[in-house]
Image (cartoon, rainbow, N blue to C red; front, side, top):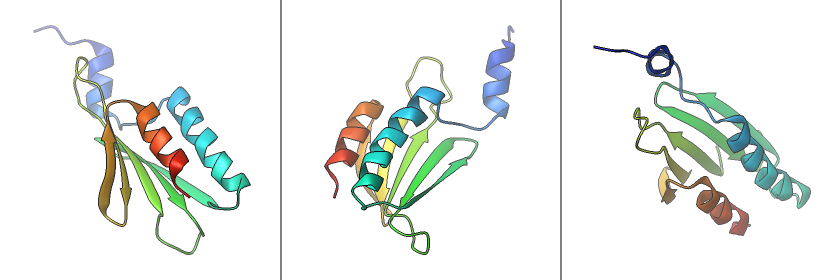
Length: 106
């Protein structure tokens, strides 16, 4: 059995947003901050999921949570989901669709 080192690190590591993904998310976040709608964010990396939480105030629970769910496969793309108050609002394999949805939220 042939095991590639890059696959071993991926299986043992945490799921994260890439630099490009994070840049796109922060661009949408920044636009909402400029309008005074959002004020804080948090980023977390878990074994199968990366999480970007958006807050209206740092003293509240997240207004929206954008997750990247790892497929653990090199063939199948990651799944992105937007949650609010425990409910799934939008799901897609394309981050741009998720961000377009967030841009519409006010």
